[in-house]
Amino acid sequence: PPATLTFFFNDPATTEIYTTAKSSAASDVYKRQAEDIITRGAPWDSRTSWTIVLAEGIVAALIGLLFIFKPLGGSSTTLQVVGLVLLAGSLITAFQLWRHHLRPEIEQLASFRSGSGMTVGLVVIVATFFVPVTDAVVAALAVVIGVGFFVFGITGIATSLVRRQLDVPLPLFTLVVNAVLALAGLVLLLAGARGADSVDGIFNWLGVILIATGLALAGYAYMLRQQDEAR
Image (cartoon, rainbow, N blue to C red):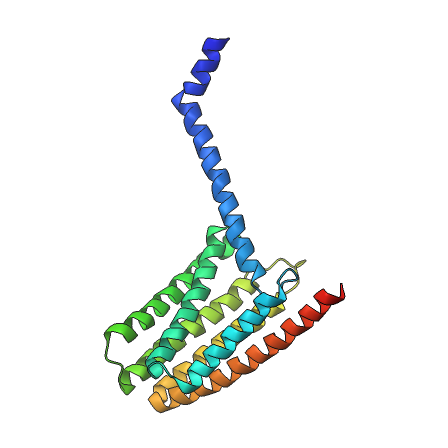
């Protein structure tokens, strides 16, 4: 009857259920869109365009040059960039938690990983803006960010191994990346303990590695372009 239909569509509880369902559906759409943007930016993803891979290579090479030549203010700028990298990695982990892409048994470990990384990244970025960056400060911040990267890498390895399902293969790429991050953190920590000169030397080596990575990505982008043209 019309009266029943009128009551149904005007009933506050019904309206609340409809609004909640619509909001939840919209939220899922936004989450999927954000996830697609992050996933398609990975150079190893089959859907990634050669232009994106080339752009990532250019960015890596530019950051490498920044580490070596330090044109914008010496080690303080370098530390800011490294802090931003750690912060970005932590935000990606936070996004995975928000998207519920992690198994429930590792969510606490991933939350610790994300929280500690964001804290260290923000501390380093803020400190370089508001504290006079002397050699002692550079060494201290290198130790702090070294600890941050070491914890971030080790917890990343742990989240891949803790209660892993036996029928699922090991995520070798993820393990290698996190092992490299943990090793880089340990090297930064030890360099910071030895002083600012050692930190500068480590950043110079890191710059060389980033430039080499950028050139490798540029070569890979050229290969992808050739494959696209051959289709």
